[in-house]
Length: 335
View 1 (cartoon, one colour):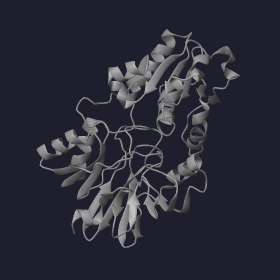
View 2 (view 1 turned 90 degrees about the horizontal axis):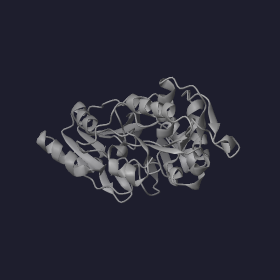
View 3 (view 1 turned 90 degrees about the vertical axis):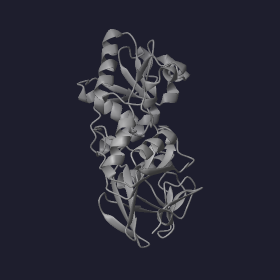
């Protein structure tokens, strides 16, 4: 069986002809298999959706309970038959509920990883390498310059800054799903027990993580009432867009932080006016991408989005066939 007969790119997304389904389609389709709850992968309006329970919950939180016609829960490690194609979900280590999707038919096995990372994350299950014939990977940070430091070091810099500038409110820009909760969990792991204040846009997903057993400690709303004393020496977590908003100017001499893998690039931090860049990403760095490709044992690699050229070239040097899929609609760490 030719690989393109099992999975092929279409304008809607990756399509499986024998199973008649799409993986992470960017347009409404009849049957969608979803890897995780970020908006560029999980969209509303599909007739049928198959995803992990957590991803289905997250989609309902973001889009409302009627986000799809029908929904079906995929249990990690359990193989389902979708129109004669074997489909299995495996942990991706990206955000709560995230999964790789294994598609197997007529002796050919392709794994679509979605977004993933290999670093420890106290808010979700760790990534599991899956042996396969063809591995489909992202390439958000697929350049050798992108080697993420340990998160613990970044949190230590944050807490040191808090001690150094007790008169200033430290506002951390962090994407609403996954990054915000992970940053908070790592801050707690470092021994910080004081309340952490939240922008309203983060509240529902943080509440959900806590209901799912992820301990984020005491969280308080960063409301106007709470801000009357301007919260000097406190931590506030907000969407990145809030850093440049008038909303953040209410706090005591706000010190802008931003948790993102892109903070490796100083010019990006400078352009955004970030005083304390925190290099924290939910995507694999260069070393993790290369390590993962080897771990799967795949004889061929397909690259969905990001810095495809460097990763494809690296694969070729390793004797692994590779090609970019040039899929559109996926963003570089937009969540």
